[in-house]
Image (cartoon, rainbow, N blue to C red; front, side):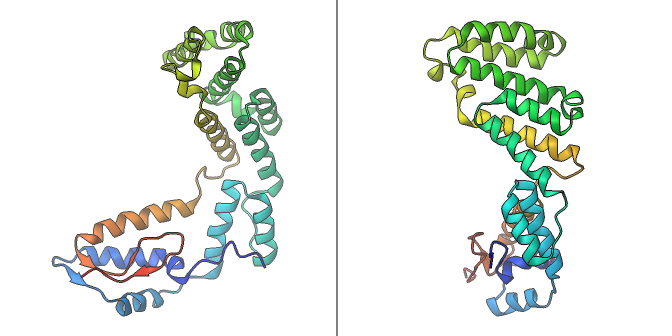
Length: 251
């Protein structure tokens, strides 16, 4: 069996917990909530397995775990929100950017849906900028200058933000040790990941799918409401989100 989606019962009751916490926060005096009382509140709220399955499938699809999504579909009977074939195509684009093969990524995006780049000038500029960064990374100075002048400079004339980003990128050519220059972060892996994430989000949006999974938003909500409740009560807290284990209230 594939157990990726086996989530502890406390974790399944996040929304119930948030509701209970919200009510408790309104209290004017700090109180102590025992583990027994807390677990009883959680057990009183029924969470449909189908809803939990949809939440997990949403995460797998949005994050691009194609194989996991297919196994989960078979074993849980939960249908994905998107055709799994499109997930594989999206991940191929993302991997191309992450490995520095920007032109390949651009061609793949056009093959998926040419309107993505036609209607998103910021994304197209950032892909072209990433292509320029890769030329500089591998010391192709003349090619980089020619590419910047022919492809990116005209866009910089139309958009001040583009011009500033272009100037920062071209400035890399003025330094012998580009990795340690003031703009060296452009050559970091994080820059590739940033561009890949932007492309991934644009593709998801074009497919009428939210660009971020729902699960992390629920976790952020849980953390926020626990921080709020800390000021009002001592209660069994979830400190380790990987296990969702309730810890005894600090009295």
